[in-house]
Structure formats: C-alpha cells, structure tokens
Length: 462
Image (tube, rainbow, N blue to C red; front, side, top):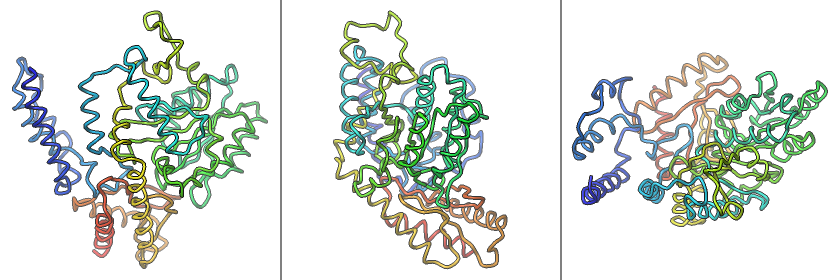
C-alpha cells in the first residue's frame, strides 16, 4: 500500500467510524450469532497473494461488524463501561501510525515526558497526595499484580511467610495476582464484609493479629473503592491503619470507582487514601479513554524499580542517570504510547467536561435507585453511592423463595437483553441474584436510563 492508497483508505475508515458513532444507537447491542459462525465463514488458511484493501474493508463490514458487541452503545449497562471517545480514538490512530516503542526515554523522549506530565495532571485531578508518582499500565489486573510483586520484594526473606488480605467482594484479579506472586492459597485471607458489602476493619485486624501469632508475616492488604458486584466502598482509613500497624503493603483497587475522585463532593469516599502504598484506577472505564489505559500510582518508587528493573548492557544509554525509563516501572519491556490518548482526552473535555459527565451518570443512578425504592415488588440489593444499581423483581408469590426468585430474575434479564435495546448483566449478593444496571457510557442520557427501567418493568409484568 503506497501513501496515496493509505490516504484514501484512511479517509474511508474515518468516515465509516464517524457514521458508526452517529448511528450506533440503531444497532442491536449484542450480535445474534452462534459460536463458531465466523470461524466457519472464513478461509482455513491465509491468502498466498495479497488481496485488495477494498475487499478486506468490505469483508470487515460484512463479516466482522455483524459479530461485534457494541460496548459504546448508550444502552450498554453491563459490567463496567469501556469508553472510547472520538479524541481518544484519533489519538490511538496517531499512536499506531507513529509506532513508537516507549520502553525508555532514549527510545521515545516525548512519550516518556508526556507520560510524566499527564500522570502529574491526573494525580492532581484525582486529589491524590503529592507523595504518589504515577505510571500508565495496560490494565488494573497488571497494576495489582505489580503491587503484590513489589510488596513481596519489600519483605525480602520474610516473603516465604507472607500473608495477604482482601474481601469476598474484591475483583477476581486480586486472587489471581496473589497466585501469580507465589502466595499460597492457605496464606490468603478473605475478610468478611458488612451489610453494605464493605470490608470489616475489625475482622481484618483480628485476622492479621492471628497470623502474627502463628509466625506469619502480613504482607498485603487490598481495599476496594467501587467493588465489581455492587460498587461497595471499603473504609480506607480504618483498613489503612490496620495495614500500617503490621507493616503490610496497602493497595487500593479503584479501577472503576477511582474516577469519581475528580468530583470534590465525592472525596469523602476516598478518606484515608494517603495511607496507601499504591492506588490503581482505569481511565479506560469512566474517563472517555479507549482501552487500554490504567493509571497506577505508587508511593515508594524505589521499591517499584527494585522489583522490576533489569538493565542489560544493550539497554543502557548515556542519559539513564537523568531521566525516567519506564521499562523499569512494570512487567513488560516494550510499552505503547498510551499517554497520548489520555492527553487528548484531558485537553479535549477539560476537567469541567469530565466532571459534568460523571456527575450526570451518578445523578442517573440515584434517580434509578429512587424509582426502584418507590415501586412495589422491586428491591434494591445494595447501596448505590456511584452509578451502579443492583436490583431485582420480588413478586409477592415468590417472596422468600431464593431459588425461585433467582430463576425469575434470570428469565427477566434474558428477556430484557433479547430486546437489543439495552444490555445488562447479573451478580450474586449474599446469596441473592441481582441484576446490575451499570451507568457509565459517555453517550448515555437520562432517556436511556428511563428506557432500561421501562423494559425491566415490562418484562416483569409478563
């Protein structure tokens, strides 16, 4: 492909994306395809000779797009959002074109220094302490694994007796990180939660004291701001005090909920964050930035680098003593230029624009929670401090019969999703089947939330 062809097809792709953004609401959110359908439709081997790019693009439209789930649809209320705003998409296009390898300052000076600037901006925006230094990772799963590995490294010889603590509501990436960090399951403690699904500090303190008495070493405490099932917010100050009392690394997983810290009125949810050793949040969830882009903040940069720095001669440069080399700040050597899209987003929308979006989502969630609370035979199963509402339909005839209620609400959820207008997922909260309505798509408006509530009630009436 020469530059003229690239220009023509590039314009064609941008035009297609612009139409896709404009018309996305007309699409069914989840494709009506069967497992293996695309695999059977495609050739069993790569072509021997190159094919026309026009043909490839047509196959993309005809074969790939019909099997895509449209996460950007304003009716998407499942899991947690992964937003891709136009400025971030254009920045990603530039990143791909530049092909920058950002493992060190010498390999891409502007990429390294822009990441330093953007993470400084973002730390200020979130109201995090100046003692934190940020670095961009791919996902929160990677960042949490880094926290575990750094905590283990800091313990030295005591790492063989290291214990770790989190609640039963913590994200699945936390037990996975513990496993990958070599912490045996018998040294991992699942701490009970209270009625609001937040970790109980007194239970954490008791578990740590018991482990010390047994000759073990508390090494890691993970708190969550915005748990995946219910967006419960753990009491950060009390948990941090317990962690500090035993010298444990204190990691805060705020993958989704951390974005709420850009609102001054929600900072009380983050009271005690200054006690953390590390903090992670995902701009790719609630901050208009396309996947992947995770912000990992750490207090002890020296411990981080001691854990991940391996510098063979072929990577050394004459500037190393004066610059940041991000290859020493994480697991991979190679790094993408992720800072560019976050920079585009922060400048395009500004602090006020991002705050307005998140405020509106939280307001929609509060309104939906109010509708649920005010409607007979509907029940909210968890507090709704942010923009997730966990609910279920409780017909009088089924009240008290949890298996029947679970089956009833699962069928209700399936009917709602079959409409193609919205898409929801479920969870279990203290043995109760809950339908999750997670608000966070940048295109979502009040009318979309009204629509999902209408569909839920209509489905229940059947």
